[in-house]
Every structure is written in structure tokens, then in C-alpha cells.
Amino acid sequence: MLTQEQIEKFERDGYLVVDRLVSVAEVLEPLEIEYTALLRGLCQQWSCDDRLPAAADEKDFSSMIMAAVDAGIDYFQPIDISLPTGDINARTPFHAGPAVFALMTNTAVLDAVESLLGPELTSNPIQHVRVKPPRGALKGAEKRPHIVATDWHQDRGVTHADADESRMVTVWVAVTAATEENGCLQVIPGSHKQPMLTHCPASGQLRIPKQQFSEAMAQPLPVPAGGAVFFHPNTIHSSLENTSASIRWSFDLRYNVTGDSTGREFFPSFVARSFSAPETELRSATAWRQLWEDARTRLSCGAPVDIHRWDGEDELCA
Ligand SMILES: O=C(O)CCC(=O)C(=O)O
Ligand SMILES: [Fe+2]
Image 1 (cartoon, rainbow, N blue to C red):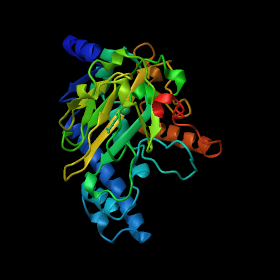
Image 2 (image 1 turned 60 degrees about the horizontal axis):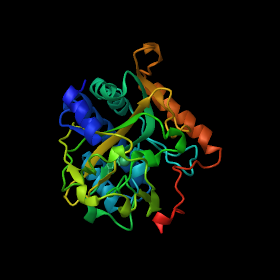
Image 3 (image 1 turned 90 degrees about the horizontal axis):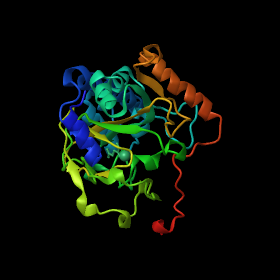
């Protein structure tokens, strides 16, 4: 659980950095092993399709990512822990593996979230892995916030309006140490006390126009591997560019009070913790993956879903 001091800091500033949240041996190493195996399979397929030189699969996770980047391969969706929005078909790849489920249901993570939201917690499906290569290694005009620096936004802005009153928290977990050099998060302290601001779609991202906040107040948040940043859905945040020579790897997870809307009701959520009805907690990684597979089947034969509510028509977006 968080200390009273940590809870008060979160309530005052809208964010909290915890340097050591999850165990390297119990959480990060299994993730590294799972993602290395995943990338190995992907590299073998890409080599088979003549998109990647042979033997690229014999490397470690980071080198395989760099080999994919170098070959101009879009590695993101097959490793992400969510389906995309927009077009989904029966073979759209995603990764819902047991080490990821173990992170999402990790006791230290849930204890900390319980300190902020109480003991009835739903795992919110707005969740991503981000593996960000060095800026200089990227080819073309890559703009996605899962791969390059993320523009200023509030996470409230990436939900649909049905979640405007939802009690939510974002948990951003550093798998590699996040530094100012490799693109750590930055926040505007105290900005969670503001309502949701106008967001403008711009270059594949959402951006809060600069006249709505003071960028000079930005506070970078370096975090060691295994540490985390917790923030309120109205906290204005972004991330820096990766100007280092190595990848920056993180997971961002969200939790909301069970019964409140997730803001992406077309994706699966699950009860991660329940004091009042523990039997409703999902404890099986296989069942979790099945929820996403079922969602993929359902969404692959319907109209594409909108990722957010913003159309760029607001005059602030001009
Ligand atoms: O990691 C990043 O670049 C941004 C993450 C973010 O916006 C989030 O976790 O809500
Ligand atoms: Fe965000």
C-alpha cells in the first residue's frame, strides 16, 4: 500500500513516482523472456518473408527490435497488449501473454492502486506496451505515440465521454530505466485540478494546444527499471524524445473503480481486485487472452470503432 505521504502527494500534484514498485526477478525478467520469445517468432516469420536478414532472431530483445527498425518493419501491433482501433480483422495480432497478465494483476501494483481508488478495481483496457527506439534509428515519418515522443495530453482525453466521471488511475511501469535522455514522461504538476481540456488530433497523436497550459512548468520524471509513475486522468503529461542509443521500454496500464465506464467499452475489462466479491476476480492469464480474442472476433465483423471523441473542429485546433 502507499504511505499517507505518498497519497497526499498524489492528491496534491496529480502524480506520484515510486522508484521500486515491481520485482525485477519476479516481474521484469519474465516479461523480458516472454517478449524475447515473441520477437524471436516474429523475426523468423519476417526472415521467411524476406523482410529481415536470416539470423536476426538469434539476438536479444533490444537487438531484434533494432533489426526490425533497421529493416523498416512495423513491429508495434504484434507486441502491443491491446487491439488497435480502426480496422480489425480476424488475424490482427496483439500480445496477451502470462507475464503481462502477471504485471497487470501484480500485488504491489494493485495495492498501490487500491490506496488511490479503493478495493474494487477493474483493469481498464486502455493499455499499451511502448518500445521506443533511438530517434535517429527510425525511418520515415513515424509519429505514433507508442514509438516516438508522446505529445501533451490528459488520459481523460483518450477515453470516450461515457468515462468522463470515471474514477481512474494510470500506472506507467518502466521496464528499462526511463531517463531524460531516453524519453521519460513529463507532467504538469497540479494540472489534474483542471477539467478535461480540448485535444486536437495532430500527426497521429492527440495534442492539447499550448495556450491551454504552461509548458514551462513541465517536470520530467526519470524512473528506474521496476519503478512506476501513477497519475490522475486529468494530469497533463507527455514524453521526451529518445535521444539515447538504446530502446526505452514501458507498459502503461489503467485501472478504474469497478462499475465506472472504462471509456472503451468495446474492449474487454476485468475485475482485478474485489474486496466485496473476491470470486469475481479474474485469475487466469488464458481467460484474459480469450477475452481479447473474443473482442477481435466481434470487432472484425462490425464497423470500425473510434479511438476517441476529437474531430479537430474546435477553434483552438486551428
Ligand atoms: O510513454 C509515453 O511516451 C507516454 C505514455 C502515456 O501517455 C501514458 O502512459 O498515458
Ligand atoms: Fe497518456
